[in-house]
Amino acid sequence: MAESLALKGMPREDKLDYILDVTSLCFEKFGYNHITLDLIAEKAEVSKGTLTYYFQNKEGLIGSLIHHHSKKLLTSVRESVQKEVNPRDRILVGLESLWDAFYNDHSRLKAYCDLSAQAFFNERLKSEIVRIERAVRNLFMEPIRAISLERPDYDENVVIMKATAFAGFIDGMVRQILLDPESFESVKVDESYKKVFLSLSESV
Image 1 (tube, one colour):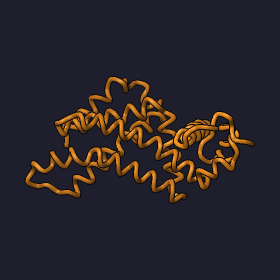
Image 2 (cartoon, one colour; image 1 turned 90 degrees about the vertical axis):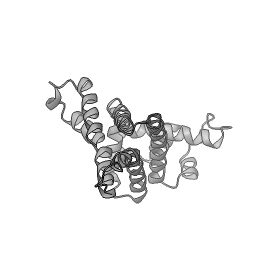
Image 3 (cartoon, rainbow, N blue to C red; image 1 turned 180 degrees about the horizontal axis):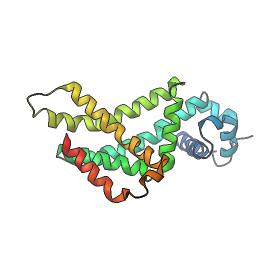
Image 4 (cartoon, rainbow, N blue to C red; image 1 turned 60 degrees about the vertical axis):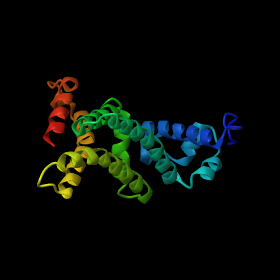
């Protein structure tokens, strides 16, 4: 299939964005195991050769997709966190921003879970998932360290483990709510989650 007229004359970055946007739609609809370069080429109305010109293989394309979307998400969350001066406020805003990103976009959480599972079998995907998890952990590391340094029993290992726990809290919490909604039918999630986050930020 010849490259679509829509791509002709586009700057390279615009072409990449277009391909990644189509890939994202395919990924959300079909899941990792069921998408191929042929399918993406068909949906994007470009030749498979065009895809392999920019991306070596499916894993390279999906890896670029993860990087593309996570960079925008993490930049947004980081900017929100850095507006706060108080360390506990930074933790609270970090939790709320990540909650909004996942709970209000179920497809994003589903995609993240899918890719996290695939990361055990693919080094490129693993490197991207690890990069994201480190970035999220670092969002909490600085404010937790600032609070902990005020204590005589400061322990950097404890700081790292606390940051890890906070980083994993949101996707774990949202995942349980989405997978097992019956257990949360009587819980007013939208009213209670902020109280939970406030309690967590004050517990550091």
